[in-house]
Image (cartoon, rainbow, N blue to C red; front, side, top):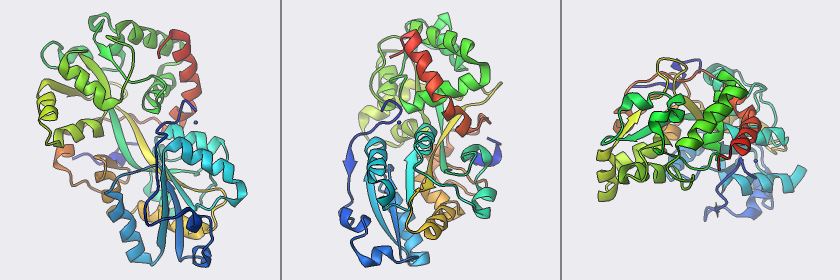
Length: 358
C-alpha cells in the first residue's frame, strides 16, 4: 500500500463554474450577520471547492472533537476565488480549500491567503506538498497516469510521459484541454525537469500524435481509449479508480479494455498533485482556522480526506482503506515541489499557445 510522504515528494487555470450552496449554510451566516458566527473558537467559516459527500464525515468529526461549528459554502474554484476578491477585507471565510497546486498558487499570487506558523503542519505535511512560504498545505494527493487500449498498444510504448510524443504513438493520443490545471501542472513539472526548449519539443510531438482535438474530462479520455476513438490518454488516478468501482455495465466493460501505466518509474517518477487548504487573508478566526488545518493533517482526518475521492494521504503515518485504490500497487512518485511546478504554469501556457495545443 502506498503512503504518499514516504517520498520527498486563475480565468484559464481555473475551472468548474458550477456552484452549490449547502442547504444548512446561508450567505448571511458566512457574512457574519449572526453574532454567534463571530465568536472565536465557536465557528469556522469555510469556502471549499471540494464537493464530495464523504467530506461530511471529515467536517462532522472536527465539530464533535472541538465543538466548533463549520459554516460551509461550496463553489467552483473560479467563482470561489472571484468571490474572495470581490469581498476584499470584509471577506468572511477563515479557511479556503482548493483542488490542485496551480489554483492554490494563483490564489496566493492574488494575495488571498496568509502565512501560517504551525509546528504541527510543518512536521506532518512534507515540504513538497506545501507552499514555500507556508501559505497553503496539501492534504490529499493524486497521480497523473497513462491509460492505453490493451488490444492495440504495447504498454512498453507508453512507459513514460515522453513517449506520448514518440512516432510509435502517432494518431493514438487523446487528452483533455492542455490548459486545464491537471495538464498545466504536469507540463510545469516537465519544464522544471528538462527546461523550456525540450518541453516545447515534447508538446509539439504530443500535438502531432493526437487522434483528435482535446476535449472532455479525464473520464471521457478513458472511455475514448476503450471505444477505440484513441488508444492512449492521460488521466488522474481517482477517475480510473472511480470507474473500477462503478456498477455501471458500460464502465465495467471499459475497464476490461483499458490498461494503466505508472509513467517514468525508471526516471523522475509519476507526476503527483494535490488538494489543499489555506488560512484566508482576512480570516475572522485565524486561531480556529489553523486548528482546523492541523486537524486535517491528523491520521483520522487524512483517511477521510483522501478516501473520499480515491486519493492518497499526504501524511506518512496515515493509511488508506480503499481496496480498489490499493489494487493499483506501489509506485515511484515524482519528488518535485508542487509549488515550483505550479509556478511554471504560466510558462507552460505560453508553450501550449506556441505549439497549438488546444
